[in-house]
Length: 611
Image 1 (tube, one colour):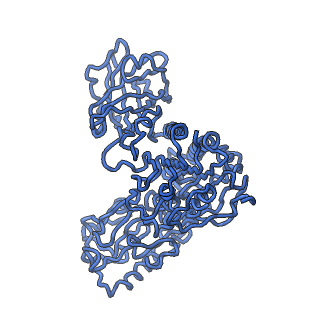
Image 2: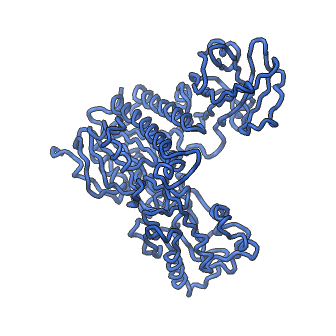
Image 3: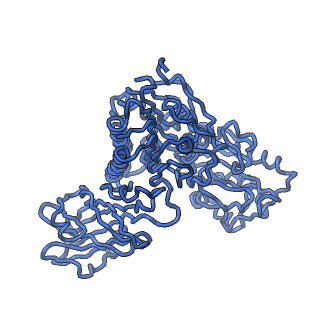
């Protein structure tokens, strides 16, 4: 069995202060264990903006955004129309080498599993699974809800999420009430597999038995309310005419005893033959018996599928160590950022709801962090060898901001962005979110009079004549317009009773101080302080500064824990560090090449005195 020299486990959105606080309280045993076995960086900083593709590419390349090119989540070339946006989740826009690419050119082999924006292989000796590999065609069978209603010896069903009583449809004579056996057609978009397929559900005294046909259902273990089936593997023919193994689980979500209604949820599944690059071992990986999606509409379902999904990744790592010779393994999970976006404000007490209480949000946080802790302990027990150097890290944290900073309103109030008369009438407090979600190709924008427009989460561009196709500002007024934009940003404060909202606003050609620059950097770059004000991409992170934190518990700083024979043990290193330092440090420890374009450095104080 070949264990890797270097192992990275990335957890999107894991918060620094939350982990430290919970471990001090005797919680999160998985995180507590790795902290005892390694070095915890208590003052690690993200790059700016604190948005996933920007931060992860800073980790993978060891470089600041102006070098790797993912200066924001949304990328815009100023020579194009302001409404033309590209995504930095696509690897084609990354202009620096990720550390596994540098290693590949040196002859080392890497396995990169479900890593955000990894995309297609750009170097030899690298295998990618998921993580943006497939940008050409649909590869997912979607998640699927359905309900069965028993009434007078017959059944009705619905294959949709809308459970309104008037939406029931007759069950197309595919039921056998005498046997309490029902056949459900899995509705899908037809882009992935060629034909619809069915599930058989048997209602027994012991619970529901589910399978791909009546014989399989008869042999299945029964599930009761709020239970999952075992993995159900079936071969389906794709739209390309190729038989592929897909893996599913079903969940007994709800039972309405008054109306005799059973509500079921079926997980989706990806065609791994389209989700690997290169495809050499795709058939073997596709046969791994576990679901390869993270899904679920409830707290419990999401946590459960995270555990299943993590198990799928662990099985891939096991297969790789037994069958291949990988020097580097990278695994990624986006679970904790999902909980930030949905529950951080409830946990901090800054968002309010009749149904989601602070205690419930805290319970959800702890449960998901514990699921991630189980994966961390599995890596320690099964992958870490004497010469393996491991880092567990995140890209950013989060703050549950109740206030929104809408750049579009700021520019419109200052007369820099102009709407037509009818659209301007709609620009009210009640329509805030409609304008928040608006794009620069909105027909209500008067581009002849508009002098500035927002792009990404932290940029404002001058609508410059001779550069933008719809330019209105003469070149000789460029600098004055930049100054006007900066003054307008500073003047706007959505939360005058709280901490000051704007941390900085500066010309783009002077934004190297925050790692910004390059052709897709804005003419103005601005950031928000650690406060009650957020806004872009869900509000909990993006244009907040990397050091932002608030008294309610939100913290923009990521976690970073390194362990292995080269690193100190049971040490909390309370010194400034940057996520661009992570891979230079780990590569040095593992004896693999430094990322070619890195601007970060090696944190020597993390090593034992021997090294």
